[in-house]
Length: 209
Image (tube, rainbow, N blue to C red; front, side, top):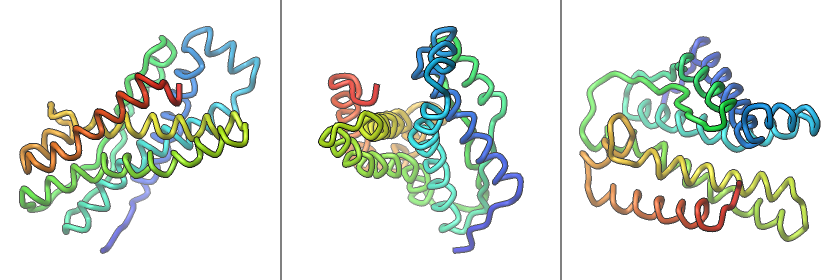
C-alpha cells in the first residue's frame, strides 16, 4: 500500500486537529463568556490537550481511516479541510453549541459498491475501536481517583461513540447512506449497536460530559 501525504494534506490535517481541539475545549467549558472566564481562571492548557486527545483524534483518525482504506483499494485519496466549516465550529462553540464538519477525504478511481461501502464504514469502525481504547482509561481513572484520567477516558468514549453513531445515520453525505446502499445487513449490525451504546453511555449515564 502506497500511503503518501502531500504538504497541503498534512497542513489541512494539522489545522483541522488544532481548530477542533480549541472548539471542543470552548464547548465543554460552557461556551461564550462562561467558557472564556473558565479558561482564563482555570487555565487553557489542560482543557485544550484533553480536547485534542479526545475529540481531535476522534475526527482525525476517522478521516485517516477513510484515506487508508481508499488507498488500499487503489484510490488516489487526500484529506481536504473545510476552512469555512472549521471557522463555523469555533463560532458555534462560542455561542454554546457545536457544529463540527472539519472536511473530508476525497478519492478518485473505480470502485465496486463493496469497496465504496467499506471505505465509508472505515471511519465509524475506527471511532468504535477508539471508544474501546478509551474505556479502560476511564475505568482506571475512577479506580485510582484521578479526575483527569476519568475525564480523558470518559470523554474519549463518549465522543467516539457519538461520532460512530452519527456518521452511520443513512442521510445525505454521511457514511451511513453509502453503507446502507451497499449492504443492509452490514448497516444494521453496525448502526444499531452504535446507536444503542451512544444512548446508554452519553444520554443515560452522561459519561464524558
